[in-house]
Image 1 (cartoon, rainbow, N blue to C red):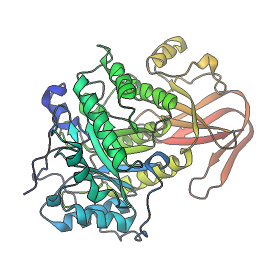
Image 2: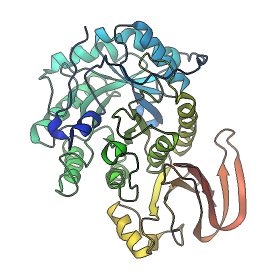
Image 3: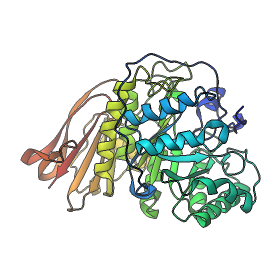
Image 4: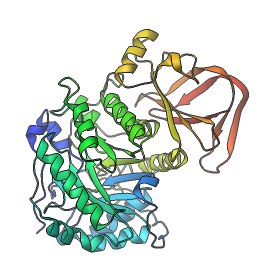
Length: 451
């Protein structure tokens, strides 16, 4: 039988519902039945030759926390990795315990060229207030068998740690041990969202982020945020503190040069928010792209990518198409310098819109080099600078159920084109445009090149 995995403490969460949804690290294996809609069997992607990943800091990832499904069956491992590869996922999280078939899992990851972050609750990985004391010798012995594997990025250090002194000491210690064992390996720390015990109201969420940076100097800045678990099926996306959490992490990521990573709600397994939809997935993932995230992870992929047997779920085709679009856009934006960030349509009054934007760590419209005004429309806008010094604008429809058509006034007349992410070509929209034409599906993303 598999070992008992660490569960998140309910005290960390606002409600029992959030206790079920709040984590993105180790959780106890579940053998209960879940949604398992049949889907057509698709052919396996072509196996990739074994190759060491380019490095977690220089790669864009569409990732997934794998639902453990039928732990006793090796067929589940094969099914799950194959289905995720077909769905366009290039990073999976897994338990480094023999009872969970880690050897077979790594073989399948190598076959399809998928990177992995491993977890081991016997001293390597902590979760919330739960951890196993470990010595450096024990830690090194636990991670040593995996560090030479070409697909292993590293190990989870801590998921949703408490904002208390001993946890920073232990996280720093485990990260140092990890880097001593292999300087290029990831020691992954993921923070609680601001709807947990550390909030913007009590001032502790910002303090937690700053303390982690100052005391641990983590490899990445990462957070999870599950708006549908918090707010139900129809969140008020204009007032979501996701924008505050991601906004501050984006600010610190730019300041420190660290990759920004984000766990989004990939499954509707609480039974209260209605079916997970393509619009909901697109909005969360595309918002992550606009904020400059380099790793977007399903928590979890059960019901959207795979069923409980590891086979394609009912939403598989839609999810795969979204993943392909997100991967193409993420690779295109990878390495570009983040610039401005704006939320339009938070209020019909421009001054109030800016006041709310300040709360979300947005840029000042008055200082914008790109935009003359923001439309009264639910639109997220961010800018990047490419290698040629051109401005690239990412526009995201901040609605998960309705399409959006609007226009964004530009500060000066610009030559505007759109990158064709499939061919690498650039499609000219106009030689001298004074507005950006926006036509987006629910949660959709568009990229523009301004010259």
